[in-house]
Length: 183
Image (cartoon, rainbow, N blue to C red; front, side):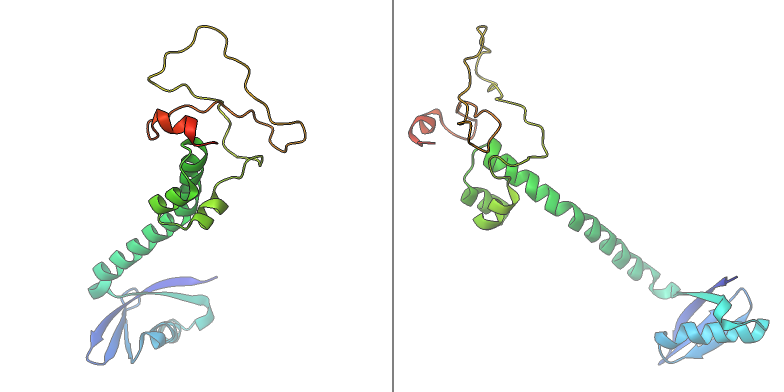
């Protein structure tokens, strides 16, 4: 069974004063590396128990605000670091596949090279984890009342299984660019 104690440290010149208020013990050490061992040994000697059964948490009250701000910054950084790859992959797919922005332009917008954008965006014919929603009508175009014409399909030997939607002008691409881009 282990018993936990809190050791409060404060600076005394070039030394560290170590106070364990729960057992009214004071000791000192030269470095913080020595503090935990010194506190554990002092507690074990005062209580007559084995040092291996004691855990010590080192606290420096004078530096707590500074250390808490660093701890919080590290926590936020770790959370952001985990979310960044997913956000970049989603943005690449949306820019390249849905909005038909070139990989080079998408890279410029996201601060990546076109090779990185290529790796992050899903190539045609591969499994995309996002559900395919089919062609989306543009907000300014009226909804046709007649049934939509059949969409051109890829040849049967093509790895692509989704029909290719007809090209429509998007809010970021002028209508005159659709007919002439050859895609």
